[in-house]
Image: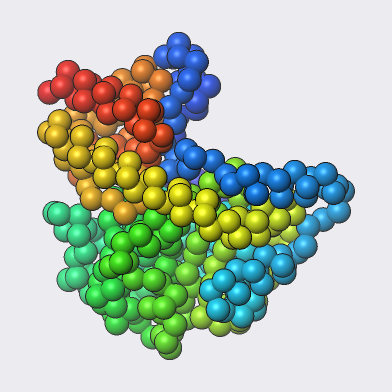
Length: 369
Ligand code: PMP
């Protein structure tokens, strides 16, 4: 018998995108433009940098607070939820993993989106669960009939990202309500709002907490400090659950010290700097609108995005486009799922770097036609 479990041996490997050092060597450019991981080009708030400095200066020889009490309380207070219903993760991806470990038996059904976030599929498969992915309509919208059918098949867990990665599309309150209405009795709804801070600039964006508050089913809303707060390297995400019992189940499966102390201290400071967050969201929104217009003006199909990234139909094989961009020192993510082989996902950077990206991409696509 093989040492490695069958489920694991057959898993797709998470694709973090090209290595900046390799792209630097390939392109000969000293400055690589990294648009592959939906990071924040404006960086962290100065108050957060100072909190991390002080935290490390205070020493790291002790284990961190195992429950992240101060941070959980700060999050709870900011959202008017008791701290007992808040859980912290080493990034929100850690919470996706813990939810699967706590809930899934082999053979259980999980429903998520296509195209979607790869970890919404990988973590369930680690547990031996079956994953059904609900496609979007031809216009990248919500396919009500496909969702109804998928939910009727009786999933134990539903992963719904709003807005969605990689499309950037936002579900309306009505669409979210349709998913909620179709949930089987015992299913857990995981609403992944990794990009929610960007979408909240749109008055139509349904705030997940408000939408699910009265739901008499188990649910958890996941958020992260990695995107709009600019703390991807620090690794903190959090979940707000329907009830404390779900948090206690996650506490049983998580590693006891899953969020380090400088990360906890950074996140507390980040929550307090509203102005930095507002600036990031405003600048990101302006660039999303500007770059979308420019790429459409050059004849490319760009999906309307309420995030910090764009899903772009290049009209050419995405692997080739990504390779050409690498030669120019620009890293994007090439999509390979059937039906999306011509799509790249590019998170935006500063206006200067975005201009370089637009120029290179339009030149490459013109050459490839
Ligand atoms: N959910 C979605 C939809 C994402 O795109 C990401 C990051 N790519 C995550 C969760 C995980 O982010 P993190 O672990 O940094 O919080």
